[in-house]
Image 1 (cartoon, rainbow, N blue to C red):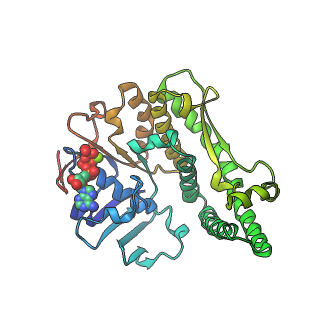
Image 2 (cartoon, rainbow, N blue to C red; image 1 turned 30 degrees about the vertical axis):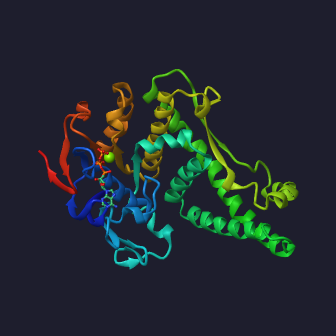
Length: 359
Ligand SMILES: Nc1ncnc2c1ncn2[C@@H]1O[C@H](COP(=O)(O)OP(=O)(O)OP(=O)(O)O)[C@@H](O)[C@H]1O
Ligand SMILES: [Mg+2]
């Protein structure tokens, strides 16, 4: 699949943008603060309805405007048109003119993987960030997962609200517990099967990128080891004390280990950065394996920051994308443009919210 058309209205510093893109390797060149990353952000938004900068939609509205619009035509086996309008008052998402009722019908229309400086948080940050990484990939690949996740979150909120009451009604609590166990067990099962599939891809890519002798392991770390219901029962008294649900998928982690030690605690900065990129490479390869076609790759600056050896580790992914007529968007400034990419580039000049061919 590739992004054939992109339309932006009042998105970040773009008042109005209408672009057509072929498959291939697109290089977005420009000075700082011209709108390079904003383009990647808009493409990622079309794939996930989120910003990879970890901000809410309101921030993406061009200053002093009421709302933004992002639209795209995605060409794959079929052709799909996405339209997304967002303002504080009104949100409209359509796929081929029809309003999207269930997000699981939407995810997968455009699949993309982003490489950006924020990725470092996957290694250094709180477990929540790694859960989101798992959840996003599972939601993009298993239609039932997203529904279970949304239901779980809803039941969890209700259950925690009950636990906060002075004297919780036991019957109500029990009924929420039953639902929590039902959805939670499905999430745990999906994560359990998924992590061992992703792990070898991440290991291989870490070896390529880092060129170091340490063994990288990725291990799913659920808070519930055995039966979810029994575990909830076991922590019943503590739950009342803390007035919230203490075990379950919402507390899980994905442990990243180098030679069996926590990478976050003991890894060097370079190792952490290589690990973060390996996770993203693994994500891209997982999607490629599953769907037989590479996702759209969005690479924000990171290539420029990496030394030659680490960049080399990314090349196999880029080559594969090239051979499969995939699509890559990469931003950089004129100075840190990795010249070894050399051939076959489609170059664009980004300048104050406008984009021109630069060949
Ligand atoms: N909501 C917004 N409305 C209008 N302009 C915005 C908004 N958000 C960001 N900008 C502007 O967008 C520009 C930054 O765009 P972007 O982050 O894409 O830059 P960049 O080209 O990637 O730069 P760098 O090379 O420094 O990463 C800045 O000029 C900023 O002021
Ligand atoms: Mg940028």
